[in-house]
Length: 76
Image (cartoon, rainbow, N blue to C red):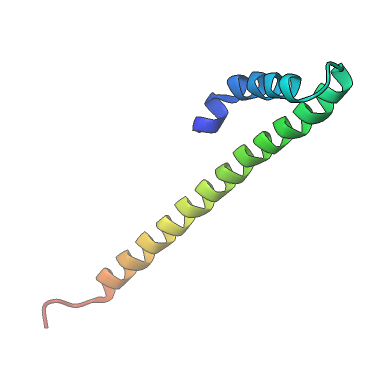
């Protein structure tokens, strides 16, 4: 969520970084900045996927815990 909210700043920052470290040629700048933006987008997708998997695992753990409590008889 935080990465996606700061996407605009990251894209501009990537192009500024590419402009500083490459020769004054737009092709060189873009050939460095575009893969960096792509990697940034992939990190957003990966973090979203990991967050969803973690939430599913937590839900599964809660359902297992609820079943265990339901099966336990405390009145005996």
